Amino acid sequence: MKIAMWSGPRNLSTAMMYAFAARGDCAVVDEPFYGAYLAATGLDHPMRDAVIASQSRDPVAVAQACTGTIPQEQSLFYQKHMTLHMIPEFPRGFMRQLSNVFLIRHPARVVASYAKKREGPTLADIGFQQQAELFDEVADWLGHAPFVIDSADIRNDPNKALSSLCAALGIPYTDRMLHWAVGPKPYDGVWAPHWYNAVHRSSGFEDPEAALPELPAAYQALADQALPYYDRLAAYRL
Image (tube, rainbow, N blue to C red; front, side, top):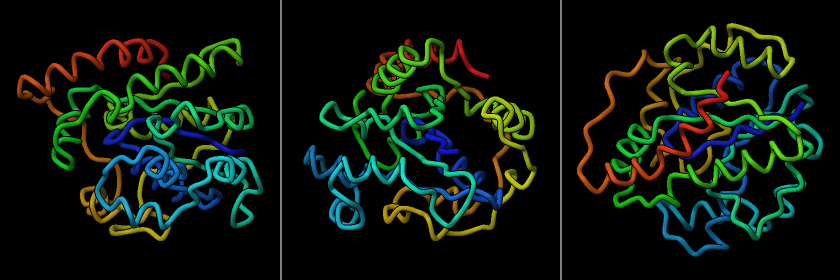
């Protein structure tokens, strides 16, 4: 089985990749379209040149790798994808060969976390609108809503949330998903030194989060823009 997890940045996405890698039967890949996305858009992201040099710039080749032979002779292939990377020019037909899941997080938390790593984010940077568009596209050809999982539910009860996700996907659950080794991982993207400091200090999912953060006015306005997209997908969460 090939599992595509679609989220925006700062969304528990790396911890989820670590959880699936810890299973022992699952190969993982970290944001395979990132290099192609930066090359196509010309956007200035941290470590831009290193990211582009580390991955294929050809989105068709990336899509083929996502649907091809599962690496390392594993039975599962977990793909951590950023919704913002799927710009209109990139092929999306490959998604029909994957089990697509949508990972969501309240936008106030996403904005607060993202702004610590890259100032002045826009709605396009945090991926909520693109996530809703991809969700609708998958729902259209499935004939029903795809699976949605909320990062808050994972942090509130990782065992329950991951058990529910595995059951929905039709794969066995193992509590090995709850823990991983501290530090960088060989499957991290080259951008990990900039973005993954906190998760590298972790050995499992963190405790439930406190109240929503208070944001400066401009960032609160951005979170408010994203909130309707989050709320719509949250209605379908596992």
